[in-house]
Length: 106
Image (tube, rainbow, N blue to C red; front, side, top):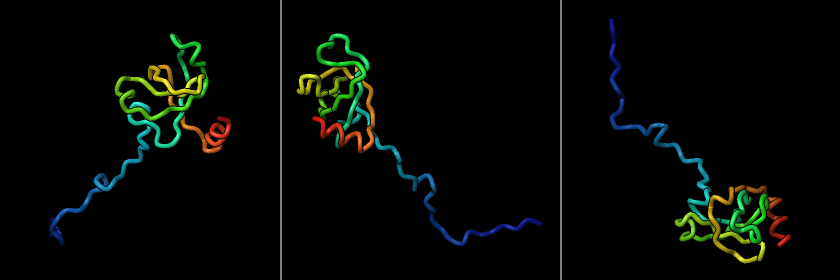
């Protein structure tokens, strides 16, 4: 014999998937500029050997129009910020103590 159980309520419950929240921090140089301080490492310096040093950490500046063009606004060796191709850099996340040390050194 098979028994059927009648539902005690009508309506819909939220599923676990609908309640999930995104855990992404959304950081990408292409997506947005720095919300605080964001840094990149130079991995290519062709055409800019006097301005960029390979394997050096550089600070990013926010520039939405540059990002649309595939460029990043970077503070270079001159201490000024200029546009460079995005593929010349890799984004990095620094620990708070390293970030403080870099800020106090400049």
